[in-house]
Length: 137
Image 1: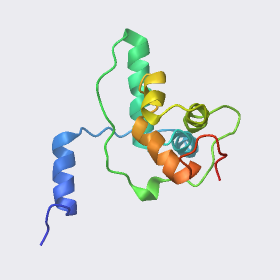
Image 2: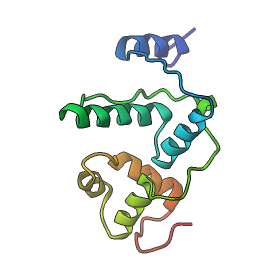
Image 3: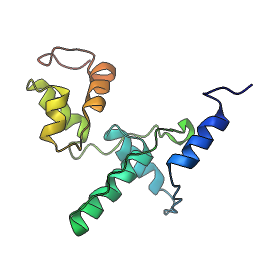
Image 4: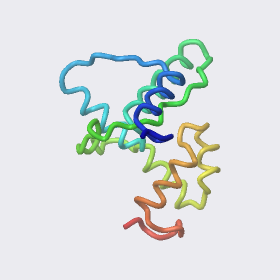
């Protein structure tokens, strides 16, 4: 009973590898954060960690080398769409991809803020073509 993929094993690993921080935000803000995280192709956790890292970098010039937890909770995913007022990370990456940049080149161009693995997932899931000159479907 159990095995390497059991919930108990995952919980044990997460307890060893990650610290937990619980935050309270005003009602209604969770949906806004979720929408922006999804627009950036990230989980809420990844989005918040990146935001904190960017703030620390802005405050003192040194960002921590931290990566978001890999455990995602499907119940936390929003179905709302972000406001279309500004370009999000996926749209920016798509423009670069259409210009002929590879996922690795896109990551380098944006100083690691848009990860190559994320771009590869967007290509597969959203753009559905390996030919950057075609429109996404």
